[in-house]
Length: 283
Image 1 (cartoon, rainbow, N blue to C red):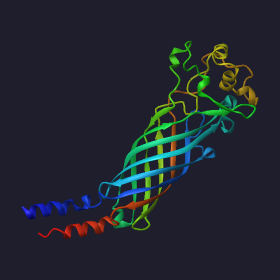
Image 2: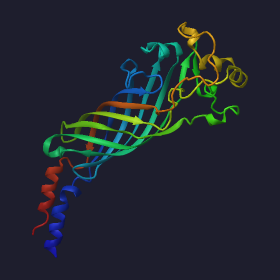
Image 3: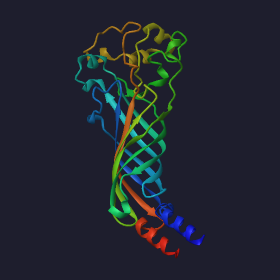
């Protein structure tokens, strides 16, 4: 029986021995947006900074659980799009993003044996946002409360209620990490976040009746819903009820990518730990 138990523990040692590893660290880099105001999948002209805290736990040599909290910013502006139609629309937005996420990494290599490993990751995230834009005087104007596309107005029940400012995203991506020392790991990570909302930018469907919007939300709402007259590239007249403003065909995305620096607690080397562990059991 002693030999059987010893053999089972010997086989399990590579997994059990690394289970005590906890990593705490930072990620710092860039954030981007993809949606109705972005003519390209990623417009690097509107790349913004992001920063986050990360906690990881190695379950074995190849599986790592992870959790994190990040802050980033996103933005876009029709004025810089190449399409004449989008320039004529002349909409813009900015938003801060706060994200909490949990997930897992699959390490392609044993980092303790090789000193580095590429990895893939996936998970689920909850994030908050609030799009805003500047008016002609440069004042910051929160957009959601203006119901620019009729959200929450009784005259447009098909548009539904005001969009929720707390949403779910599905983080996934790839990374590379290098064991700088037994305690410190540095890496690079690229992460995409498809969401379940089309309103990161406050744009999704069509214009609503100007007089209805004026009566329900005021002149500021009308001014921010259609801005083509400001640039001189769009018609001076407010668009007709139902005219296309955005497209609800695809949901919005954002991305967080950056450099990671992690500090490892617990034993220092998975490979050496498994060897020491096995010596404790004599067959």
